[in-house]
Image 1 (cartoon, rainbow, N blue to C red):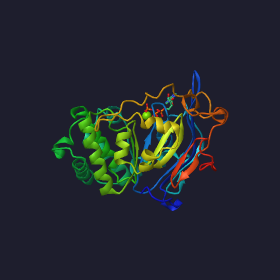
Image 2: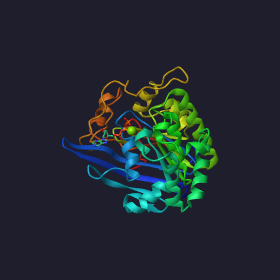
Image 3: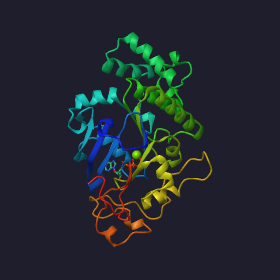
Image 4: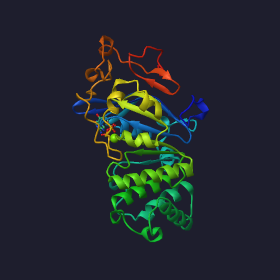
Length: 336
Ligand SMILES: Nc1ncnc2c1ncn2[C@@H]1O[C@H](COP(=O)(O)OP(=O)(O)OP(=O)(O)O)[C@@H](O)[C@H]1O
Ligand SMILES: [Mg+2]
């Protein structure tokens, strides 16, 4: 998946120039600043970056999941299946979210409804979006729970979310996200709250399901070790921007952005250990009270020079599918 440049017809999701701002009492928060990326059929796109870099807000913006206000999507297009999701009416968007783009967020307890059984929550999208009868939805719900490895699945359909362990709840969330055979699964730190063993099991499960269902996945995580193991291509976010994208092997062997280089030094050396929140890079993340007028990493960058503090660098191409927003690379912008 990672080799060669894709033609546009190979792209199933095309995000261009996305800008999301929150209006708060303390002023504006420019959470997503001109983010562009695409997703190709069947690939796993990893998204990394320290806390507050805009990973979740980017995904929630394109799924139409941010309450507006306080959020405001100021610019951008999100092309999916020939339409711009940012201009798609709510009703149609709900259908797309339920059926064609699945998503799993970090905390399954806030995503699952505590007052309905797991079986009900699995059957709902099947009835609503795929028009299945009660009986067919029940059979499919059973299959889905089995697919994600929940033992005694038939009986567990009538259990409530609190009767499942954290890892099992996360599996239920994945089952719901997969219910209608989506073309895309967006997973936002789906394993962060889980212990390392369960995390490994869920990652194995995802790898297997992706192979079997041939869907494209966007996987957001703090953990570069996880990305190294599962991604085809990686986006690195910083200060609400994509500062580098590269095929996974290239990102680890030839990172171009000083922020990516710094991130790579934060990976724990013990295999299987879990990365902590990536806050060990010296200095503070940028303040997002205005759109960036200079490189947002300049204040922490060991190699910053004059221009970095005066202009915001565009993404310069480095190699096929590899670009980085750094003035040390002086080529034409990839995403002007
Ligand atoms: N409802 C909100 N109101 C105001 N600011 C917000 C809101 N939601 C998010 N933000 C801000 O938007 C920025 C991006 O947040 P986002 O949640 O996308 O970061 P993230 O990269 O997902 O971080 P993490 O790794 O901690 O999940 C942050 O500065 C955050 O404080
Ligand atoms: Mg997040």
